[in-house]
Amino acid sequence: MAKKTASNLAELNEYLKTQLSSVMKQELAQVVKETESDMVEKEVYNRYKPSPKGKPWTYQRRGTDKGSGGLGDIENMKAETAPTLTGVELTVTNTTTGQQDTDMQIADLVEGGDNTNGKEYKHKGDGSGEYLEARPFQKETLRELQESGKAVDVLKKGLRARGLSAF
Image (cartoon, rainbow, N blue to C red; front, side, top):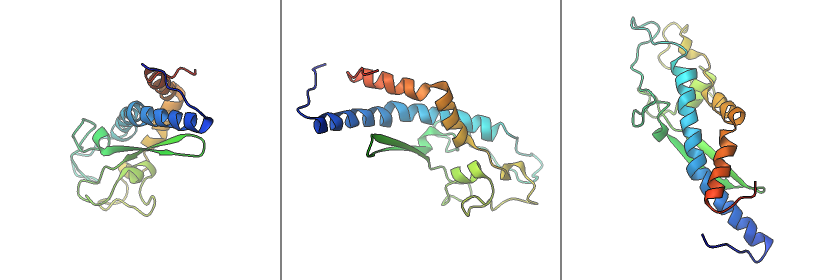
């Protein structure tokens, strides 16, 4: 790989932000999506099983497989990077919509529980279902990434692959 040179700090800063953005949008976003999918399995799907008797509500889970359309499907997670004053910010948004309410994204509803951000479950029977409670898969995704060090490791590896070895 040819060495990149910068003639001033602004040029160097721009180059570093470009490389960081690339690593974040590709490698880091993939790790975030995979971790979120795992946390959906743990915090959402494993929390309870839908009742086969229809109480409070029966539905077919879509799951976490790629292409399933479920909350844990990484194809429903969109990644964007944006420059900030001090670097680059990665945002991964889960765009999964409800099975019946296809115009409503459900990630924040599942994360916070019924009546989060003005959203509520339309099919809640007598209101006693476990699924109405918060299942914080996004909070747990962040915790897992921080505690495991996976995010930092991916950033280091991605930057090294692009010829940057500052740490």
